Image (tube, rainbow, N blue to C red; front, top):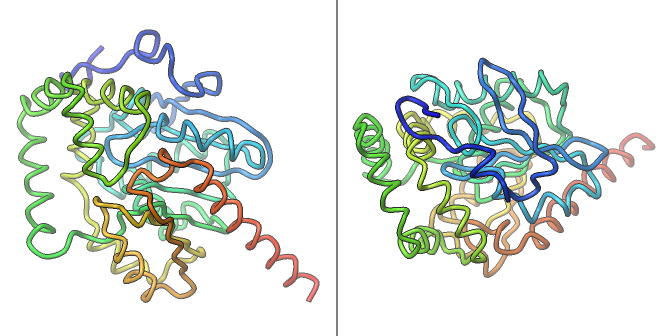
Length: 304
């Protein structure tokens, strides 16, 4: 199987031991076949992973939330086991439109959305465009602002050059054959995760199609426009950040909160960019506490 000329992951082979496999299904929407995991019962919570990840990122968090919610987790286009979008649609608006079509196909109206890193940016775009109206939006180490200084200009340009080079994804995938190299990439986020998690990232990174999708997202990203619009975000925003995050500076969350009415920040000490993989129970506790506070406030307002 190929995507844009790149080898893709195959479910019957690469997904044979996939985390929460029993919740997996494949759904057609927006011209793609999506890998979706659905479990639990109650209000819908939508989980959206970041660049280069997949549903496996929520392996430990999903069961904890499924005791309280209907949990829907998806592989973004080109990631994991979901088919890719055309290159020109791997932008924030393009991904937001595609994910909205999937939600419509599923008949799902999230009461809570949780986006990790770049996944938070996609959910921000969807919320601003009124494609979704969640009572609570949680950004988990959210990449909601552009890189500071020259990096903000150079990083997307480098990603675009790499993406346009058809050999680049295969070179990255070849490097992923070295487990130590993958370990260094993950450690560079400020997180330490279990060996089985590292093995799954290695499996993903060894797919040139998966790598190409990650490069396409970075090449088409426009966080500057999103950041300018976020002050009019219609849903309450909670930013949960790991104090050791080396990928998205925690200070960005406090800076952003100053410009968004009612936005809050909760810091999880000792955790990095992949906080939900390092310590799912702490992240679940923060999510459940925030949702309980929201629903309690709504009940008080109704009785008042």
